[in-house]
Image 1 (cartoon, helix red, strand yellow):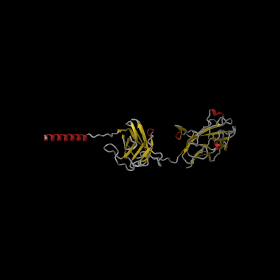
Image 2 (cartoon, rainbow, N blue to C red; image 1 turned 180 degrees about the vertical axis):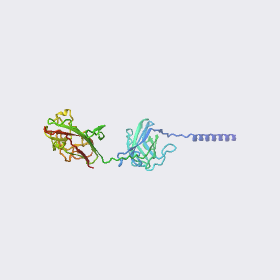
Image 3 (cartoon, rainbow, N blue to C red; image 1 turned 120 degrees about the vertical axis):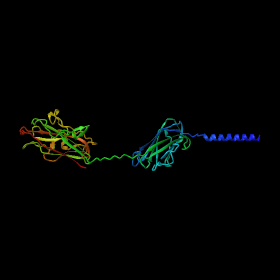
Image 4 (tube, helix red, strand yellow; image 1 turned 30 degrees about the vertical axis):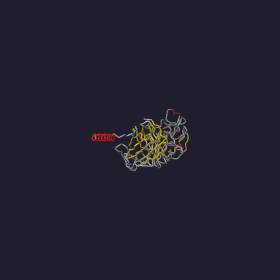
Length: 391
C-alpha cells in the first residue's frame, strides 16, 4: 500500500512538472502591436532656419515629415518617435543614435487628425513624443502626418538612420501599445553646381535684326547696306530704316552713340537737320533720324512704306529699359548733328537712370528732303553706332 501511494505521489509530481514545462514552452504574450501602414519619412527644407538647406543635407537643420496610416481602430493617446542608427533583431530601434543627430530643439506641426495632441516632449535626444489630453479615437486606414521642425541631421553624408513610430492608447507614452512601424531616411551629399555669368554686352546693327522665340537675336542681323525706299524728290520725304539690338547686365546700363557725316555725293551734301528735333519740310534740304514709330505726317507714302517701328519688346521698367534720347524720341520729328558723337539712346527707361536690361530692338528711321535744285547723284553716308556699358 505504501509503495502504491509513493507511485501515485511520483505520478502527481510528474504531471505537475509536465504542466510546468508546457507553460514555459508556450508563453502568453498579450502585448502585440499591429503594423502601421503607408509610412514614410521625408526630409524637407526648414524655411525658418537661419540658413535653409536641402532636407538631406548632413548636419542641416531641417524638417522631418512623417506620414503613416493607422492600423488598429481605437483610442490613441500618445505617439512616440524613436530615432536610432540601427534596428534590433525584434525590428525596433536600438539605443544607438547616429552621430550629430539632434532632436531636442524640435517643434511640431500636426495634421488635422492629430489636432488634440498638444503636448510635445523632446527633452531626450533621439526620442520625441506627442500626447493628447484625452485619448482620441482613430480609425484603421486613416492617414496621419506629423512634421518635426528644426531637427539637426546626422553629421556624416550618406548616413542611413531609422525611426520607430509607436502609438499608445494611453496619454502616457509607453503605456498601452497599439500600432508600430519603422521608417528610414538618409543624409546625402548635396550636388553643388557652379556657373559664371560674366559682364555682358550684346549689341548689333543691321538693315534688320530678327527675333528667335520672341527674343531679339543678333545672329539674325542682316548687312548694314540700306537703300532709301524711293528716289529723292522735292515733292515728298524719302524714308529708310535700319535696326539695332542691345542688352547688358551692367549695373549702370548702356549708352548708344552715333557718329557720321550727313549724306553727300562727291562735294554735294544734304544739310543735316541739326541736333534739335524738328519736323521735316518737303522741298528743303534735310537729313535726320529718330528711333520711334512714325505716322503719315512724315510721308504720305507711309501706308505702303516702312516709316519706323516702336521698340520691341516695349520698355516696361521691369526687364526692358530701352530709352531713346529726347531728340530722337518724338514721332515725326528728326534730328542729326553731322560729324558729332551724339547719344541717341540709353537703358534708362523710364526714370532716365540707366540700368541693366534684357535685349530690345530699336528701329532707326532716316529721312531726306531735297530742293528742286539739289544736284543729281548717288548720296551716301556711313554711320557708326557704339554701345558702351558701364559696370
